[in-house]
Image (cartoon, rainbow, N blue to C red; front, side, top):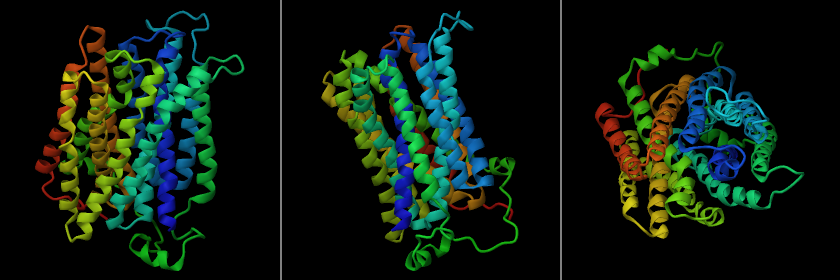
Length: 434
């Protein structure tokens, strides 16, 4: 049906975003041959992406609420694709250091800042698409399909990037530069597909009568004046909103550590070569894709069985959080196979969890401001990633193993789940003035 095709379309965009953000972690060893990068500098580059990514989550959500999904997502994708390609031009060029950083690092940081600005609008746009195209009982499943794009991008990234790094000696450019150019082109191609295929349900020529009737609950009634977005101050007056934001901060702190540091962990802790790491590094991302579908599917199944929204979301969130503490065992393991298995559990649990957390805005706030609230939630997640990444870089450059940071990461989802249960006894639409 058309609405599920739309969810796949958005899922492909999310896949491209996760491919783009994996370029630096997997290409870092090759980049370091031209532009030296320490652990703390790596954390700085990751933070440059996450800071603007988080801020743009809020701004992008607000802009999407104001200007609409189709035009907004077009601009967002073009911007982040060009930003991704711009990494290919980083270099020292004989320029002196800037604020103690090499000019090449400054150029990389600038590209990461720009990439964050673009990609920060991706999930708010996805949340709006779900709100526009799916009734409440199907939203968790739809978001699961969209969120599965994170897994597709993660699965494709290691072998594709390793292939380009080992084979991409084209036109006299270093292979790592081609990594960024190729992934940037993918986004521009997707933009053409999006522009010609996406419309609101009541405007889409491909929507049949049966599906139109099915979507009746989400079609807007005609109105002379659309209601304005809810002010930020009004949203933040409710403790339920803060609970979701802080829960996302905690859980995404762990997630961004796994996302940005797993390649380095495999290369350093097990002394793997790049080809071997790339050959197995995709496996946890494949597990994360299954988690996306299982989390949303479980919640939708509970709803279909007569469960409340509150019960369906919390059952799936709790089951997801229960899988995360296993990563604390990783420092005690000496088999790379078992380590990949444990990380696969963690990736499965995280993306099952992430699907449900990004559905909560559609459960808790009116449609006219769902993009704004989704943006605030994303900002919280990005700031958690900045803290965890900075801590990881500092510890590694000061002689620590990965053990302390893995112990912290393994506990964060459980803490976040307890926070949601305590502060939000019942997940529901929070009352706001019309």
